Image (cartoon, rainbow, N blue to C red):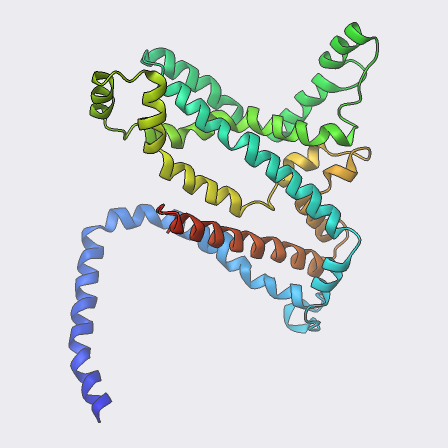
Length: 318
């Protein structure tokens, strides 16, 4: 009886709230209309495919479909974790990701700080335009340029090395050079474009802080260290959390284009392995299990790093 009364009392409040929400939605309809394409993209291409995760627990056959394929539990996960390739894939993927975190992640921050020091606006915009261009070049073209530079027959770099030492180095075919090539390509292609978000954060810094610091005798280095860097610290931490979350995502296209039979011991990572097993060998369930493992690790890393950031007194990503 009590529950019935409570329900009847709450009902008018609910409809009032509903009316308020509809009014709010109507007032901001253009903002929500602009949100619609992005929401549809995530719904169709990010959330709806999640239903296919179930085949990681099945012996999936395209002829039987998801409903007809037999359920095998964690068999594919056991095969993946106990397989001969798992530790090699983990080592290769983590090596590239950690090197990227050390060398590639700070590059846009440093470049944004340097750009912020340029006071001539036309000169600054010209530099920004040139450093953004590599982002729009496809990995196919970048792989071709790399081949033209480093190939052992007539590559420019090897020709210079031959003039100096009388010998050539098989840079493209040597496993020891593979990680350096991948990190170097990423820095060249994405550093300029990565500065956009940090420059946007820098534009919000109060100029009066700089003026006050100059009055106190601060030089450019102290201005950068005590005002600019603290101002973009929250943005740096958010980008770092997102980067740590994708620690097992090394990028499929770039590595697939740069690997060959000679450097395979270093070049095989989770992304290329999943493609090879899933598309080339048609082991759909096994490759889905490997992909799900990557996603779960990424989620744990994001939640963990966000919690650490919160405990350290930072805002985090949520």
